[in-house]
Image (cartoon, rainbow, N blue to C red; front, side):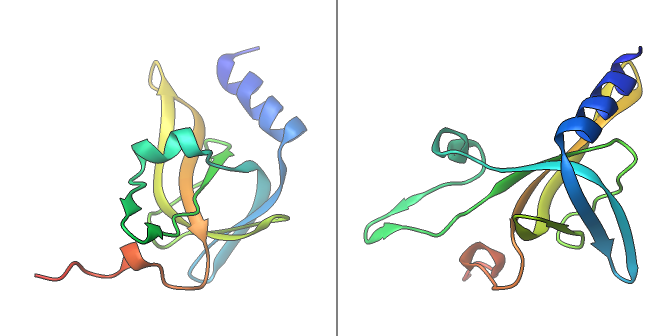
Length: 119
């Protein structure tokens, strides 16, 4: 079994049902959604402020390599909630796509880091 088939098989076996939507197009598939833990926040912009912490709830998505995701446009709906993709990439091994990953935030409310910085 190739590496790609092994990863796709694992995502299909252990992942949950997800709906990936962009515009008027929706595709159902399997994927893994889990919250990013505190130790991961240093890599994605977690900052401490004088009056406490900014709300920076982020989630990791792992899906099959055929899923087309776009930053700030793709919405992923899973049993745990609805999320918008903030960063995504397809992971390759020897020019073969193995899986797609994304960093997501809960869909809906506009977050502080979504606004333009004051200049």
